[in-house]
Image (cartoon, rainbow, N blue to C red; front, top):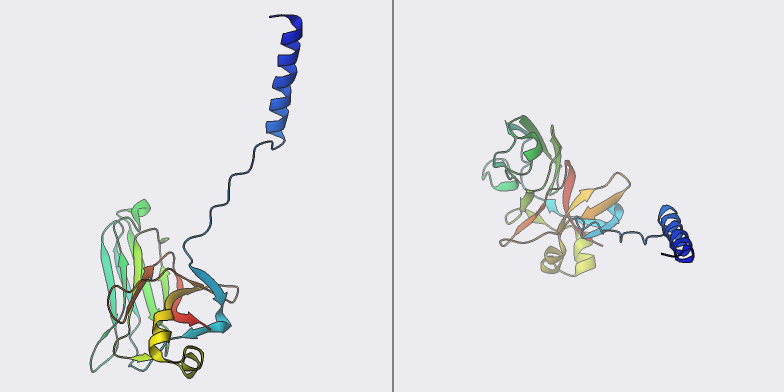
Length: 195
């Protein structure tokens, strides 16, 4: 190798090294947050009301790493299922074998719950609301959507955010009058449609 080619190669190496050190690479593309289908102001959410007797608060303790379902039923006389929380074995896999306590408090007058967990909720948890018997569309829903059926199709489960927003989760309908979504974390959840 001649002195000229060594000198060019040395300068080129330093240029590449300097470019990399100064951020010469293109930044990695941002990964969108796919846990929320849509975010709306909470004040613009039309929350699904319930006309039935309230479901009681509950606390359940179980071993992390096991499949578990928590079912809340509305009060007497019919004891109809109000909500279900499903935790798959992977939900608390990082803490497998430890006890986990989950507290569930229904929100008064609406299809909604407040959930507190002693361990962070991981993937594989689901929240289900069943509203066949006590579905009660507010007057605002009829004014915006025209009728109950159109309002019902617009419903999703939403996670109330600390900043006055509602993060609507990707929700599915596995059966008539049933709404299901992933449960990404402890927090306050309601069934609502955007205004």
